[in-house]
Image (tube, rainbow, N blue to C red):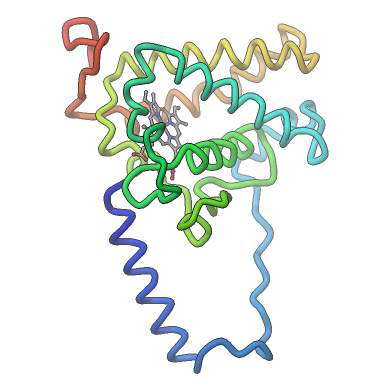
Length: 214
Ligand code: HEM
């Protein structure tokens, strides 16, 4: 996350030079339209439809992400790795995510994963001061200075499956449907492990090197 300040400065320089090249902001020029987003996981469109489609699925996914974040911040093994985020009261993500940015990027990622018309990484959508022009980060960049051990990732996945089980049951999914969802999204999530865990893990209590294999 420390690279974000440098990237922001570079982005400002690029924007400034293009404004000079264009002769500044001319409101008579046509405004570029945002291209429609191609769904990243069209094979999961059945999940999005079962969650209520564009009208209802976004709120359902935000509820899953909210419960997952609450769970990991309440878990003694996972919570210590979020201290720099929960302690970030600056409304700037220059050094570490604000809680709001983290939730916004997780929402985008899970809306894409659960078959919605989204793609990750995409734009950050929070009202935090420096977030609007930015893109959510890929999994390697987002976690490169967190030092996550393998067993902490595994704990997160266990908790996430539990949240999905509870929330999808509440949403009216049958156990068979829930197993289907887990079968569709599980491999993608576990496939992120090598991008998220650190080759130099940091052991924050109660996790110790001897209690965890990276
Ligand atoms: C499949 C599992 C995971 C996914 C999909 C995931 C996804 C994300 C996303 C989308 C972000 C925000 C990126 C951005 O702001 O641009 C993020 C940041 C972060 N994640 Fe994860 N994550 C996962 C596992 C974990 C685990 C297991 C931990 C630690 C217990 C963790 C700790 C963090 C921290 C601390 C940040 C903020 C880093 C900073 O700003 O300094 N993540 N993650």
